[in-house]
Length: 546
Image (tube, rainbow, N blue to C red; front, top):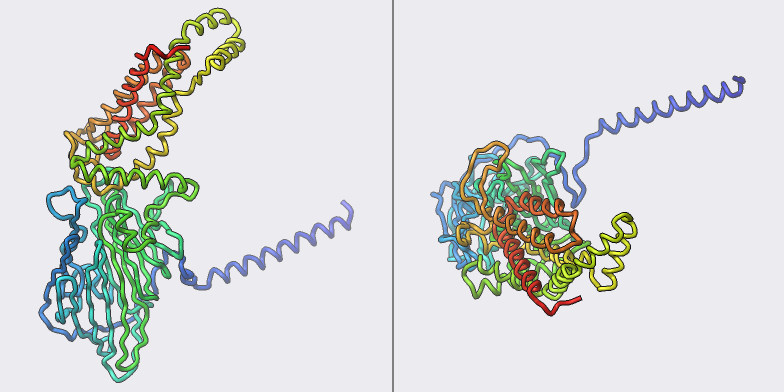
């Protein structure tokens, strides 16, 4: 090794050691710096700042008065103890239950009550100022450290399951005051009871999201290989939502500066009890100065038509991925329109689903009839195929070539029977969303099915390696699919040798459909019955010839 090379080598090593030493020093210095809060519109899982000392003294001693706000669609019970919503129930033409549907269970101080700590039992009692059938206002007094404040809270119920909450805070002292506790002033805490524990494992999913700018962002995501998030914090958003397949709670601040957080407080299988907290910003109030905050809420059925009437951006809850939206959204709208029209004429929703299956089948009938005719011609082609198979049985390459030449000559597509199934896939996915999110089907019965939005469980069982629930309709669907497969493979020579794969498909469908809403399973079952009838009618047609 020459000395020049040796010098260059050791010089390079020395420079690398110095570089990495300097890099590690900078890295450690940056790590020691406190992390900044999330930028505007971004989402973070960091907690708020550490608690500071705070003394709150409640001056108002009024006996709390409860008020009932009511329209034909919603009933809201308000509590004077804390100025929150103690109970909320909704009703409407969509409701298949005997009574109204409760979305906020009865509690004492109420949801959305004015608080200064998340889990405080000390709430502000309010004196009722005024109340009508759709609006109520309370007033309460407290001392923030040493500053007396007057707080007014009012609620007004609007149309289409929306209501507005307004909080007015006034400085009644002769000096300016800064209302700051952990980086905010007060908070409003909600715990919507959208899902009940008996819906665990039924396909009903609770989801969280927010509109940030013009983009809807899903929150508390659950990965296949990662633990689910239990909390998240965000700011500079238009609105936040908590929803299941059929109902939704939306909080939309109309005043700037309000932040929000989600916290999963408990889990029962797939059902989560989650608190949604709104944080009012730090306040600087001069002597006698007043500020107010307004928040609009929606708590009701997850129907796109209703939600868009309240705020067009609520339609983001029904978005499709951009790649598919241009053709999937029109199909979804058509399915919703069809469900609403037929549902307006026919009370039984099971019959409505059967009619939808028939209408979809008729719309696709030109292609499905062409496919059925193709299957019929393949049956008539059987003698010629046998001759070719006998003639070229020792040369498989030539055999396949001759068979394809025969198909081209007779203008037969051996895979023509699969085309209607492929075209049904977009319709199926659109209808899956419609039936899985249709609040009109919730509680609707049909034959032995107690709820078309749930699996048709007849009884539960405890047999190893078998499902806990016994669902009859998926078994009927699978039996019909197996029959359809048998009829097709027996009469279609192009499927010879593929019988095993064809018979496995219904078993895959059984696995996929086992816990799906029974309304969707009913639709697919009826579609298969229509397909069998259609194919058999074509088979009986003697005018179809080669």
